[in-house]
Length: 152
Image (cartoon, rainbow, N blue to C red; front, side, top):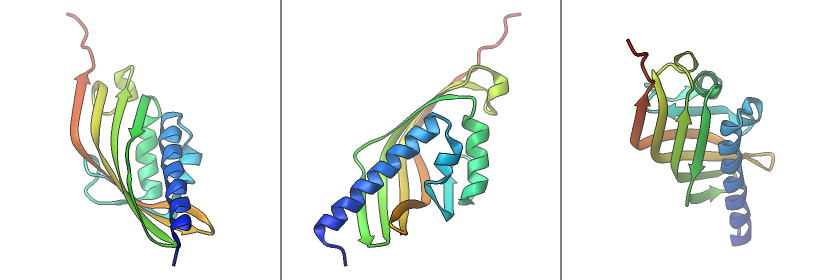
């Protein structure tokens, strides 16, 4: 059983884990991003997947979509619950902005997207290191701007 100080330390470790997640996504540090996930982790982007995907399959999607974007991801005011010394869960309100420069750089035919919603995550502590076990992104809003078309 964890005491209050140990729980606070675990919460801070999870906050730092998520901060690294946002930074690694935006700076395209894919290997470092992958290291934040447990080997058995799953990722579920409701807009893109029919069901949760294994982390390595989801990483391929993330890289394909985001590698040529300028992206800005932010998370705010998380609700973090420490379940026990090896398991935790959290809900993170989020906002993201994505910018593509050309149709060749994105599969969606848009130049910009702004979204807001929540990350629902679970975590496991493996060998003293907290990692993401499950990640599900739900959106409350998504606004897009289409790519400009050529004049005739």
